[in-house]
Amino acid sequence: MKFIANINVMPLKALLDPQGKAVTGSMKNLGLPEIDNVRIGKHITLEVEAASEEVAKAKVNDACTKLLCNQIMESFEFNLTPIK
Amino acid sequence: MKFIANINVMPLKALLDPQGKAVTGSMKNLGLPEIDNVRIGKHITLEVEAASEEVAKAKVNDACTKLLCNQIMESFEFNLTPIK
Image (cartoon, rainbow over all chains, first blue to last red; front, side, top):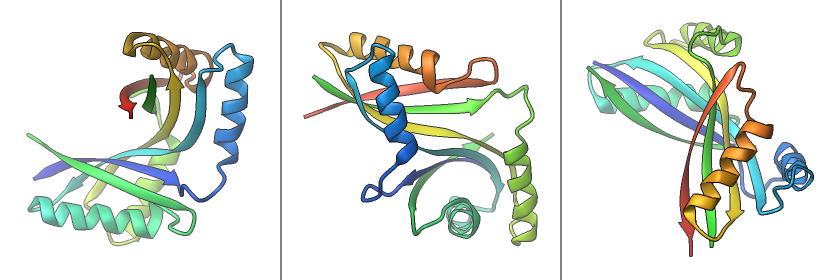
């Protein structure tokens, strides 16, 4: 079975997100002062081949902890959707 | 009313995503050959103050087209969640 994983990797709440801070400031200059608290992370989609949803979940979790997410500074969450 | 917007900005399907390609290759080296077709974009969360969901939607759309997303190379989608 094949699954599509949608992964979000975000900077930890406790840490300053300088990119987000810069964008929050730019919003004011663009005439959008109603927008606040911008935080910027990564969105990753990938396909994973696995016998079951549990196996796929374990593999994606592995990929996140080993490569996609630096757990000192970031947290991740994901969901899986089976394809055909 | 305050809303939280969850925005995904992804490279267009038709374009090569070199960062995703590199990560796909690394997955093989990490012992995860089942993972394929990695694409990497941005995940952005922000708070927006607006009178109604329609107004909030318009503002977030504005922010995406003006600043967050380069529509020549990227596409975006978002959803809004009211808070309190």
